[in-house]
Image (cartoon, rainbow, N blue to C red):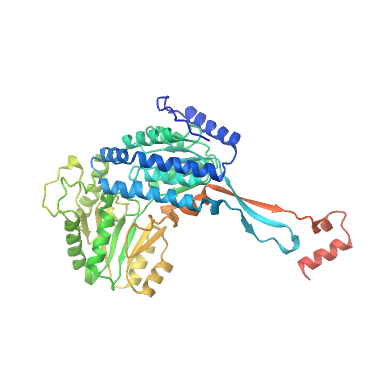
Length: 482
């Protein structure tokens, strides 16, 4: 199918009636066309690939305007590079993913055969957040297209320029009954979440995730939820403190901490805490010798989120924490620019807001432990996180961390990078989400695994049809055993 550019001048759907009409159009197009072939799916992925390449400079500009300042290199790495890698991986492996999967046939029914055939679900809804507004809109789309679905995308209203860029990008690449972008405010998002999709992918906060899941349940829509949470970094006693600080602060300051898998707090051996704090100061000074006008240091997305993160720091001070701002240039930072310096919270306790809420900013509480059992117990006493980071070399300790904690994903001796691995699934567990996408898992999440039984020419099941007699008695006795 050759795509004809959508018109971006048509009226934007804003009401529940409008949105249902869009969904009906996509669903009817899918019904008429049937499941797309391998070649058609590759073509769709390549259209998306070309569109991202074509608009990569526009992506940089739009996100920077929405944030106030967003590092060009962070955008290229997290939004463009990762997406292009995912597309390349999907293209390379799609034929294998689409191949029917042979399953064992029960002995009594042989020589019949059994298979799983992966079939498109239909129309997938995607609700994407503001923090990585291109990646987290188009990443699920890659899985949807690979699985042969059509899609509707609702970007966050907090990044309006990027939302419009996504709308134009998709309109130029796809027919409007194949993929479409719905823009608008919270009321449009609410109506979008209530649509009877065949699957809904939501990325955002746990609070909103509960609302989305409740809305989806009214139509029995299955959901994939990626919700974040408080992802711990555990520094082992055998790991170099300086290196751990560098890698944790790198993960914490990327996108100014506005990352769902950012290290949310650090568990550090009590004897190493002061050395860790000093190493964090050195690491930040090396990465960001200045902050105020440094294009590498990203702003907090808006005033509301800036005030929220500030309130966590103020609350920690009030409750007795020691707060250490890492401002290497000792600059006076204008709140209007929303550039918040990396900040350490020492002596953090569970009563503090920064230890109760996902921080989503460049603030790192530090909790000390004496034995690794204490660190594991601390993690397990709190809701299951989207990510966990452990820094250590001992195999026994690594194996213990992996076996005794539960999280959506893990990076050992690094932060964030498990997300960038094209063949690893990404998703949460418990309050950090459900389901996964990326790679084969994304394809399967957005496919119907249809079980297929094929009867052989030789068919012995006729012996178990009425009228039953002694032969049926003997056969059942043999099959069941006496």
